Length: 234
Image (cartoon, rainbow, N blue to C red):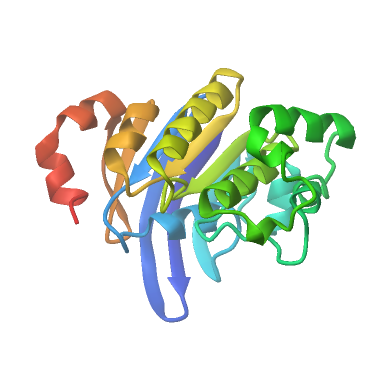
């Protein structure tokens, strides 16, 4: 589904990604973990076409997307939930959801798509006509995820979805992510909550100082406290 080869990335003169290479298979959850500042967010921003400068190659669903703009990557079925959520001020929950249909790759029935999202997120259904930014942090995170889901992407990139969220909502998100995977959506999950992410994921990749330093199935890393302490401990 996703193949990254020799990815380098820069913010101005600062070289933050160094030859990153890994792949994500269709229908799996891959956890991208490591300490704060390790380069995890820079990797998924690069995948989405949002880094100021990159070299290397990115293939998605068999196509080279390295030079495509972010909106073109989205139109091909690659969705992104940023850490800061980006709920649009002044727009209702419904209007924020409608933004996820702008690309309209498949002629999606908007009413049916909204109803399907409402079934997955009952809290949002109750607040469709409320301004999105007036909801709680957890509800805004749900809205950001729902907005990414609504056009039925092939793959979703999630940046710290559990950050600042009540434990009960984090568990609900875990159930949702497993269901999405089981229905065929591929997920790349950046997380500081390492244990939660590894319990969800099929495979894990550790980033340290802008490089991939470890990769394994998630169960193996979950059991390896030494590796977690070396690369993931605060």
